[in-house]
Length: 276
Image (cartoon, rainbow, N blue to C red; front, top):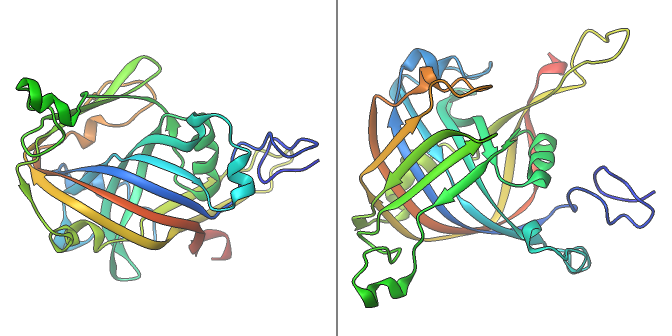
């Protein structure tokens, strides 16, 4: 039996995900907001601590990504275009890790089953959801529509799970900015995630199979097209199997959009709880 990840098969073509490294290109939107500091701090796993300078801040980071393996043989085995793109929404919370500013993925949702598998392997731990966006096209300008994707285009996105809407957001880019203006976000990278596989053995081992904090390693990053403008964000406080109510935004500080590409060779373990 062959393969990089389960399920294995005689030819190895049934693996849920191919091996790293992968190439990525993304159209990214971030909604920066404030919420109850106590509710946000409760999402910081030790040894992370609250950052006194970022109390009550959080982000919804929701890119549309295109991706494929760097290895041309692995890429040639991908026949379905659904395996080369996905949407994701990340609830990210600032804190301190090793006394340095950091950002952790507290919750995450995605729209592909293979990404659910990948996310649990690397620690981002997404759940499958449905994403819907406002349709945009540059040629809308020819018929007087503002939905061109440029400045002034109102972008709306909803994220739903099991037929129940979890969040809705909007963003209207009003001005161009530079990558330096995004330091409040990128200055806390690489993003931390908590990876955990529970103990389900009989008799119990008494500790998880895996429990650590991971960080994605990004190479050859390129970014451009930064814009910012007003935004809105609302969570469904009563959504089943979620805990979004305590995180309801008290203020939306702004929205941001840009393009990015990078190579993801894998992750590193930033903290291993089982070694403590």
